[in-house]
Length: 202
Image 1 (cartoon, rainbow, N blue to C red):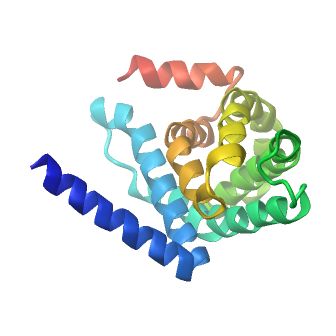
Image 2: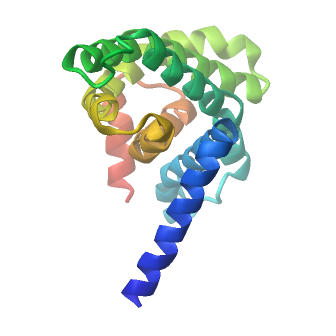
């Protein structure tokens, strides 16, 4: 049984990598879409446990961000870093630190702002975009910086270039659940309150 499972997993992994080699952008887009959908479902599980219905539209909006924004931009962003940051020694200590700093000081604020703007636009609430970013950007970044610097040091040092979007989406399952909860929360004074509420209802 275990051997058969390992065989099937190995075949799936081989097919994924073959598709990644031949059609990298579509594969990364699908990977991001699925990852964000799973993150939102995880975020909604405590609510469903309390008796609320699964908000399918919320999941569709959240996952569409992976389809339209996160998947394509992540593909381009990581290629940019690899091409322009110490390309002759991409796994060196200096390269890893430089890429991580670029990602966290440039990409993270832009990505988070675009994320909140996209979801408000998808809901048709265009007038709420700027207030949403002003209210939630800094609290979200504080949690981001607890997770992603260490994750990206490993990413840029050990993960193959082609599999970075997959790695990020695996690590991001929990973080995507947090993002989904932040986007759905109207008032947040402390982002850790969002995480605490999720744990209390589980």
